[in-house]
Image (cartoon, rainbow, N blue to C red; front, side, top):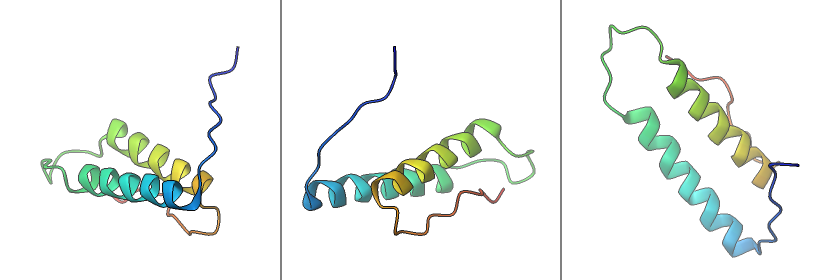
Length: 69
């Protein structure tokens, strides 16, 4: 069984979903964390997943996949 889900979105809906993903990405990036702590693998994985989703919704957008610690 596949875990994928297919959606048909019009341009306005896609833009709204992308806006939400950008908001979530910003929230994850700006979440408080100890600057001296080692990189958080969970945070980096979430940011990579968000970037991948954004790339699937808008392949023409250049979304950085690498997360800066």
